[in-house]
Image 1 (cartoon, rainbow, N blue to C red):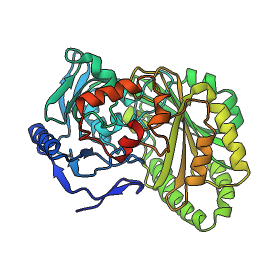
Image 2: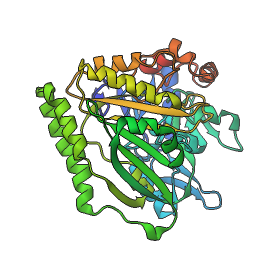
Image 3: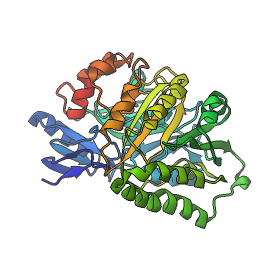
Length: 432
């Protein structure tokens, strides 16, 4: 039995069997036979979740051959995409057809099915996560039957199956409501933390896509403001040398070296962060949306990300700053803060509320537990919802009160997968 591990190395398993499915009928037969044999089946994408949401126990399913664009409706901009399509492949493919996804996250290594099923999101007060862009979905149920959900078939199920946690079946294809391809004018600039928090409402509401990174043990942040443009003549990408310097050397290679050094001598971390934050310089460029939204992440880390009411973000960050000022823990990784519009998806972290996301990270070679647990303790009373693909310690009892449609989702799961063919230890914990 070959060992499977996710990208961050937080979850490993030894499934009994690995199957590279040839096509949908092959997957249907596999699911039916597994159900009859009492075996659990889990489709695995890029393994970019930090939780065990994709952990395979009995049968690991690879969806690599179910990749690419299936069809395009030019009149509506709706595109059916095979589940195993990586986001970094999908962006250029849509671009060639004059289309784009409305919003993306900051990493594009995931498959489209894995990204939507875990609640992956980008930033922007007027934009939902990736699952909110779906108008249809197709999945194989435990008994091998194919369930199609779109405007004309089973439409009432879309709010549940669009963000399914992998608990309802294996997604084979997704219909995405795309938009005409567009540019993003990106402005990245250093700023002070208190200044950013004091003007946060205005910045978030007046910018298409606003986010910022705060450097712990400093008062410095890096703000990122992306404005949508339609005029292709305005494209002005970063020069190749600047892109390599910023994204490859500074964000990955040099950052990796600094983290290794800081692991050996944690006392230098506050000084390193001060130097890193002060070294940031403003940069401005305009490029195709999919090239601006995502960036490479080569340095391995642990991450937890929590969704809270948007108005609570400044209070939580100031409390986190106070805790870090006591130097109980020293941290090299910036704290990432993003925003999203409310949606109607049952298991979405942004369900029916304007949402702020705070993500904290710790280098893979350092113990993350004290930092993460202290952060979680600051969220009491905020109805905090953890990102399904990021580390957290909550179970069904706590999550039920935070998701108004939790019991409806579990009831649908009982109907579609009564024998829990698609479950695993993580889903047992968070869904009961």
